Image (cartoon, rainbow, N blue to C red):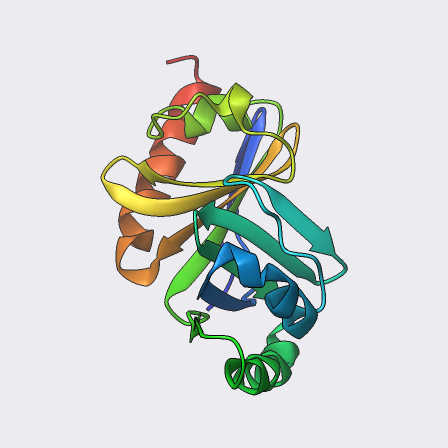
Length: 176
């Protein structure tokens, strides 16, 4: 799939390249094992994220993490967690093909997101992530910078979310 870009004064909306994406459920007391298997320290607070190179981990629930890595790393990550399963119960689900990622950047990024997201976006720290909604579609919102966000949305919701973002970006550009 190509990466369509919508860009108006103050905001750019782009479909981003695929990544290896995992949902990890594990007891917080076993985070050391998960961190070793994934190759970076997993965050301990809900909403917090950590990143090292191509790998990122976001705590999105009391025992739930969203993990990102380069697509080519998916088999080795699965193998590392399979090995860890022998001594540490957990659930690692590959969700790489379930979702698409949309990048939203520019000085009007927060304003654009606020057209469909109920969160107070000023409270989402850079490097953090939250599970939320855009309009009626579930998403994970990741803040990469002061004016840079990513939203991860299921394929089935992508046309709806992308259409609303494009409309809202055009409306912001003309001052509505």
